[in-house]
Image (cartoon, rainbow, N blue to C red):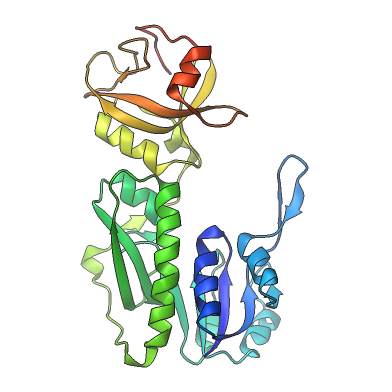
Length: 301
């Protein structure tokens, strides 16, 4: 098939690889423009941009697809289908309708649960036991299109970083299989009564609220790892918690119950496993405590 690929972050790279390895004719790769990043604020190309160039594919990075000129250039590629994975730009109706068989999206949830920007984060936060990937026929609504295929995986104690990498690989394989059997797929409409919205993560959510249940706090820590990272303040310093375990104990919410950084919540307690100081690499709790004493009864903000 003649395909246009549209994606930007690391999550999209396995899908690009799978489509390429399946032998499809990739007419062009669309990705977001290079952005300033790092201390020097140099322009950095996206993960998909780097991979597409390594594969010798044409790369396009328009700022928007709303202008008629950009839409005409897209349509002129005369693609059979567009494959979309975390592209990051809204596709106007003219773009959605240009490929002969429309645009197929790799969405990181079992639709209609967790439509929106942060499906992996929200699934972990909510305590879902299972998530997965849905291949969806795109339409104008937010992740509302009919579904062609799904694949599931248990969440268990995975962080967002770990689950994102896993779903990226599953999504690539599922997209390749969906394209192979595309003529045989019968799209299934989503059940609107089961839809939930995965709102974008707000920075305010990253500050740990010790007045919550220990299980909820532990899930929130996993959901925000590695980015933006759940955090608390210790003596005015912001400490990120990248992984934690539920621990035994009770006390005043936000106070340490021992000198091993067991922290009381409104219900139960948690103990960090991996932490990160500002501007420093992540470290195990033992390493952190060797350099920073946190006595019992310390109040964390």
